[in-house]
Length: 638
Ligand code: XCC
Image 1 (spheres, rainbow, N blue to C red):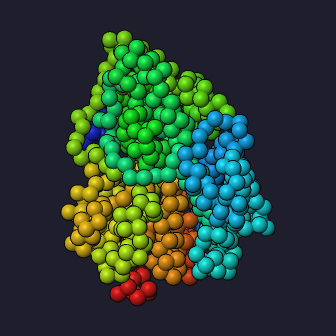
Image 2: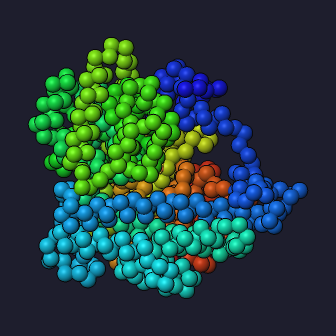
Image 3: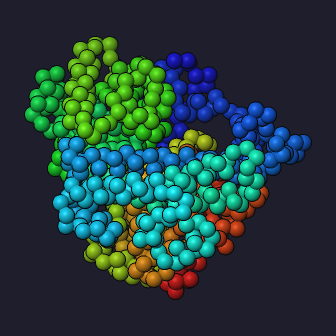
């Protein structure tokens, strides 16, 4: 591995990561921070979205001296096209994950797979919602529901998504139809969107932005919705769960498997099997105390959400953290096997695994590293594959124990690293006496001024790694605005000790009183970034009960440390829902006034939503609060 040019002082927000970062820097290894620094200064044209690399006459960069690309494309078209490409990738990735899940469910229903259905009730309810006889045998329902989702993914441009028809708030549907945003199947939307991105074909930046909104709806009403539902059916529906988070969870005396990514099903199957005597005995024979599986990134958040289930609770070792930390997990020298199930598996994992003795295994055909073993999850071979992972990890542990030169570096556990996970519409309402009206009453009287989803990634831009997430969250709860976390934002909250009931003492007096009355924390984690689907569920439930449009609710969305393309797709989902959507750092769009104005202002007349671009989280909280207060007046809450 090349020694990095500059060694940065680690800027992670939490102490454990700072310790580990210092350790890897001492070994001359780069992390995301050092590589970010090595990339400076970054191209200012690209940063504004003003570069195009689509054709052989490029690359073109738009400047005052050269205001048009070689083909004649303006900066506005280039910015819009670049943004649409990002939204397309994100929508594709979420629907890819849904396709995997639907195919697994189908193979179970057809009796080709021994994978168990954990939440039959949910499957029955979903079939009932689709008008199918939900009392039929469960296998038949599995096939029906899987086929339904696969058909939705593949629907052509003349057939709108059924889920949008069934589950969207009426007022939204009217707006989407009026604005030609009523989305068809994601495959078809992606086909259209990518065609629009081609050289010399679409020269209207507004049309390109509307294509992003359509993708946002295909992202939600196939991808995110389907992922959360089928995942619940297969690994169990989220319920409140308390556990440890961050790197110090790793126990050097157990066989250690880390599940990294966004597709937690295989890891859940491995946990199920790890309870058996065969594997426990094999682990003890190798000199281990037992077997632990740790969550990493969003796959981990989903496992954390179900960690209290009988079959998982002895094996789940904790949630390690966000994507910026993932190299550090391996640097402990105590990870025996690292499963890469999807994004975010950073390319340097291979270097780390070679240096620190971890076996890497990619388990999805989309994840490939040269010379790294892969065993793509196959529901028909799930047991055999899970067995192999458990045996391989145990052998890795044996080798680790007998290697006297192996350095194990695990930071000290801080008391703050305990967290509660597993919130959903149902679990939040359970805390409010199972009555959504109780929650709404407290919103009305102003004890809960509003709610904001703080979701998505972490970024090292500006040395952040959680800084903006922490600041924004604290600002919001101080203003008695509840925070719903998801994705790496949840990991940040957890690692900073913010996913606890004790956080109530930092909330504004009204919210504090409500939190204490109902024993609920002011910051709740819904799980993975794909659980944005569940957050929108809660939002829709509130709108239905109050009888207003989603855009009229005292709620907002925030992506305070935006990093990658799935976040862009989710941002367009939120905009299509009419939400004020705070995004920082800026997506690469400032180079176009037309695009920036449309998304930050013009959008209000289209969907009711708008993008808020603001680097300072305190100023962002001011705008969000003002928006929420305004919404409260619109629905006569004040
Ligand atoms: Fe990756 Fe979800 Fe983003 Fe975290 S939040 S950086 S995608 S792991 Ni989705």
